[in-house]
Length: 96
Image (tube, rainbow, N blue to C red):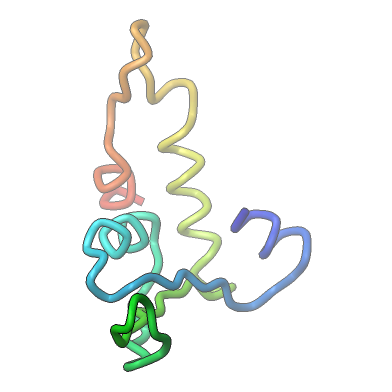
């Protein structure tokens, strides 16, 4: 999806939003290269409770290095004969 947003549509900013209490979603976004931008407090109400929304993003200037890391992470040569990944995304990003 990010490739389409940046490479095909030419957007400059791609967002990831989640409940600020959703630690797993926040970790995933950061692992994929999103940067935390802030929290919209009391952004919505769900089940009679206020919900704070965390916003993360990737910008067009960050995209080339993130894209290269994702390509290397998903490349066929990053998988062994059993289909197990050899290097994690964090390892790939550390050496990019």
